[in-house]
Image (cartoon, rainbow, N blue to C red; front, side, top):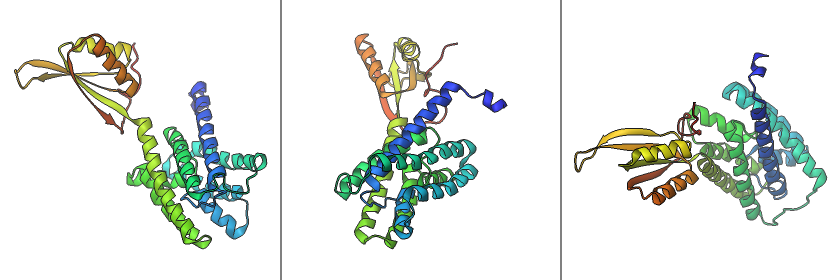
Length: 292
């Protein structure tokens, strides 16, 4: 009961909506592009297609059974929060697939071309996976295996997805020809690249370093207007041996554009460098600064 009282209702509803949206996008990718084209991309859905061909069991049922087993692993090996969130998301896939089966029955590939279906599937799925991973959840299945590899072997999520998916892809030899298996392996590799691309895009920030005599003016703008944290370093200029100050901060691309506009409008003389940071740990400089 004590833990329940600590739950922020707005944050909880927001997370539920985001997780539901992520799974809705995932089900679109699976139902409209993966299943009808008979693609066996490295995923539990791809493995379910193979089991379906061998046993005749509905794909929605097979997916549910495999996810239940993997959910136990998620709870035990990754953590309670990840496990509970993934329980919710994984249980959504089968109902969404069932809904599409009833509302939009499909007999053939939507794009009528395996390569186009492959491209659409990995792009849509990569976007959905990124949404879920950012909320410390997953769509279940392969994502759970990838998260385990990521946590214990410190391998990037995209690479983890590729490794786990490639192993599952090989199961297609039991049902499909070599061409289908090769397409699946290529799709698994592209899926890993797309996932890394989306994750980097969502997480990336600009690390900005500023040298200027008007450092106080710039610091005030960053903190008061952009509401970002900033660190001011005292430095010694190498050319004239003068004492100066360097401002270092992390900000989004839009905030960096606003900063450059401010520098231009105020005609501030400054030397500014910026590079993209894709891995950020901790909250300082990432979240908006708050005044007390």
